[in-house]
Image (tube, rainbow, N blue to C red; front, side):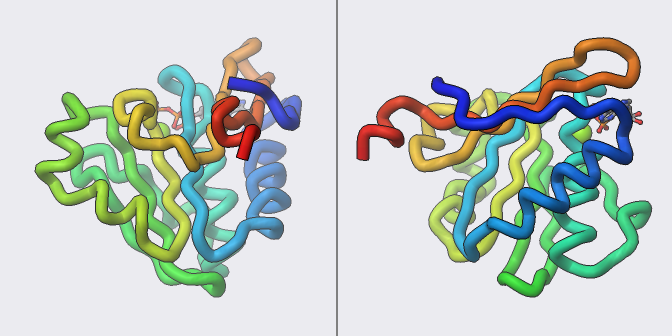
Length: 149
Ligand SMILES: Nc1ncnc2c1ncn2[C@@H]1O[C@H](COP(=O)(O)OP(=O)(O)OP(=O)(O)O)[C@@H](O)[C@H]1O
Ligand SMILES: [Mg+2]
């Protein structure tokens, strides 16, 4: 994986602003694979991105930890917000029919994407690193195979 760009965020609000600014450059078909440990800031980032693209209050956005998927209508098409923390395997993901969403028009935001990484050759990976209580490093990366194309 090679890093294309990174941001340092000093607060949850800054992470929301970073997400809002990245949202402006999204096309209507993107897969964003969000990687990082518990509390690293993945959901906070999704709140920024979804609130910006759907024009809704960020406080109304919650992670679909138990339902796996929330769907929003945005100005650039549907947003599929996945939380795969409780998905056990790629087979489980596919049994749920979720692999179909990776091919659809729209934006896939996938928390805990590690588990399905082998399905995500065309994705942009966003790695969240917990530096300290308030600081996070947010790195945009792609698989080397994607760069070569
Ligand atoms: N710079 C920062 N960016 C994002 N969140 C931050 C930052 N500093 C502190 N926080 C806090 O860290 C927590 C991040 O939680 P969040 O739910 O976004 O993480 P997550 O990666 O989705 O975790 P999980 O794996 O449990 O889903 C929040 O409580 C937030 O307020
Ligand atoms: Mg989360």
